Length: 88
Image (cartoon, rainbow, N blue to C red; front, side):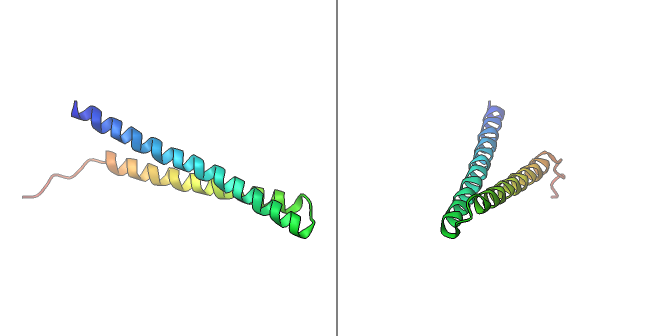
């Protein structure tokens, strides 16, 4: 059953990577919101900076998801590519 262990380990690694991407997305949005909220309180422009930085956070989260997805895709392509025979 060594093949099953490799499959399970690969699945766990993928789940770990995807969950960290989800957490990073949420954190980017929350940080953007609170930075905007703080700037609104300092400057007195009520919803302007909150909305602006909220959407900056969403954009940063999307960029993180796209980067992680492309990185994961490249790793999968390399793992599935046929390996050349070894030279002696």
